[in-house]
Image (cartoon, rainbow, N blue to C red; front, side, top):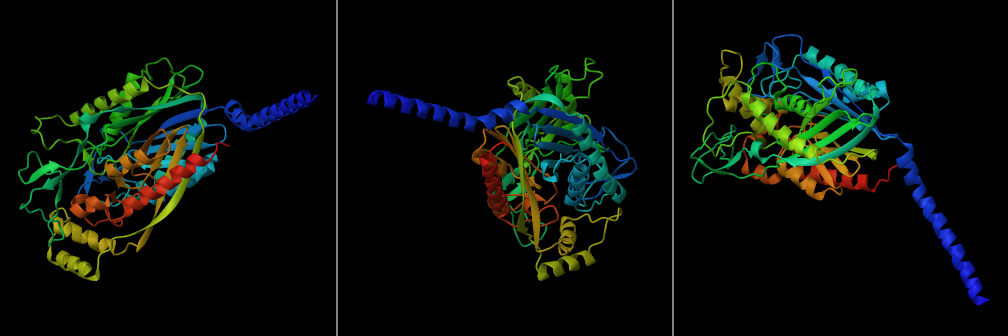
Length: 496
């Protein structure tokens, strides 16, 4: 009798346990089975129509009189059945925050996508129409005012083209195209910054085999991250978004989207995405976002100078090389029919490195006695930075920096509105709770360079106080800490 009672109790407990287990598992099963994953992509043209068009990216303002290859905003919308996120990768040197905020507001009104779920970033081509004032260049206000509506239109079009899709991601490597551009100045050699009275220990882009420097002392990140979507119905490629930590390449005096656009075209060709088989379908969209490339360029100053090159030749060299690495990663992707999507965004207040009263007066005195060149601009570095000092006086004591993290399955993405040093990106990859990670720089605004505190100690161009480098010395550490907090919180949130 006792054995029979024990068996009855065991049977009841087992049934109760199975019932509880099914209750626990039921929401997850329903979440993955009942919600259809969709994706849509669109490349929105945004080239200027009025010439000459101001271009920034140099110490002096420049103007383009023609277009070599057009500017686009390459948009990718992803929807897991409940949450939608959007990437909008813009062919621009830098995008001011107010343009990003206005674009998200308009796109949210048109599509219903929460504004914080939209990531907008600049590729950092140095040959695009200017959007933000940098050094002695200023954008065309009409072009800037019209841009949010054009960007929002591209986002809305990607959203409208959502279709059942599969998604996957991976990572390749191309170490052949990335070099740290900060070099150590040899002991006893002088390298004075534009403010005078100080000798920096780091020199950016010192020239080939410069005898005053010893070695490049920063790291590089050769990873080529790949995020791809394809149609669930016919497996045609819909979009491939990549991320690489290379500043830019350059080579065209006309409007050009640089290697970022060349990569997009190259990867589309290699995937045979636009070969006529899908003539009645939405066009494939390739895109390259800028990784943590604040101290990275495409020039190996430790080697011999290259031979003569045709204009734009190096852009194609880099595009083909990086596309090869991306294609190898793409070939290993195991596409998934569904993954959860999630986003967290936050604001972080940071101090501005404003000039002291004495520094401000010295800058004004210098500008008064320095004549401008025939083009109406300052030609000397001290005068250029004196002008920056005066302009920084109008900045607030503290600024709010927008940070954003996204979850795509077990892939995490961080967005920082700065030209981020590679050490920051490598640190985030090491500390993320997700299986794979990449960081998009120049995203959701522009707050200048983001060197680490250690690099600030060495000095060099990227640390010199200007509108292109004004955040507090500890900004990189504070931003990294906040992003890790957001990533950990994102990982703990269960798919709804």
